[in-house]
Length: 326
Image 1: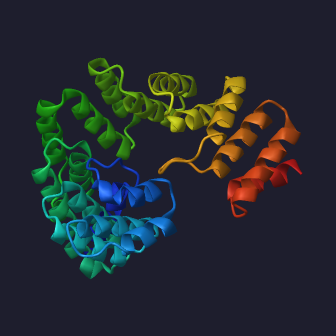
Image 2: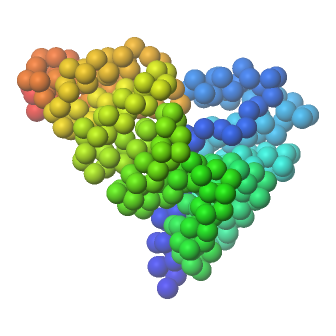
């Protein structure tokens, strides 16, 4: 029984969401550090926030330092800092949510006897985040993710998750469909995820992120032309949506369709700086190599793989692809 509980609790790692967009903004006095964090400069951000002294900004500094530890896989340090953030500003839902995510990650590294206690801590902070910010999509998403993935003995329940979605529908029908789509996506229920995102688009057809999510669900069903169309729509709504460029290229790399557009999209992606949560340029070079291979341009493909390996010499897929060509 304990082994089954441990296995089920480990599945809560699906809840980890290090790149969800923040629902709250830091004070102006900390914007420089926040910009360093968002730009992917952990050392600069760490120096900035470590220098913040006692006062009203301290909780935010602890939050960002906790996020940096989270990104580095330092779960105990992340929990310590995020707990300090929650203690300093217990009214901030985002701080509770990220502390919950840190506890979820902690589940995987503690022994079976401790997993239930750690899961309880995660549940407490996800639930508190929703109580503090009932209209916040990411807070509700984290709580629904817990309810969906946790075993019943740890408070999990698909029925309770569905009830949370129904409650959120009253606040925002469009975002309620998004929540349902995320739940189905995390459960690998791809047709249901696509249907939910399609309904969200019916409510709000100009939401670029929802079109992007629709594209993702189609990719998982190997509907690459449909996925590309959704990513193109996301990009048309928001030309700055760089991740859509990457996914247009990725879809073509698998399907062998629209290869000229794929090259254009991936080159455009490589010309832009990588934002937090987006694939690194090494991955874009690798996908570009795949597209060139689809076009029969082996030398260009090899050069793309070499570019990927210049950025990340340990990139296994690029190494394998290059070795095959050579």
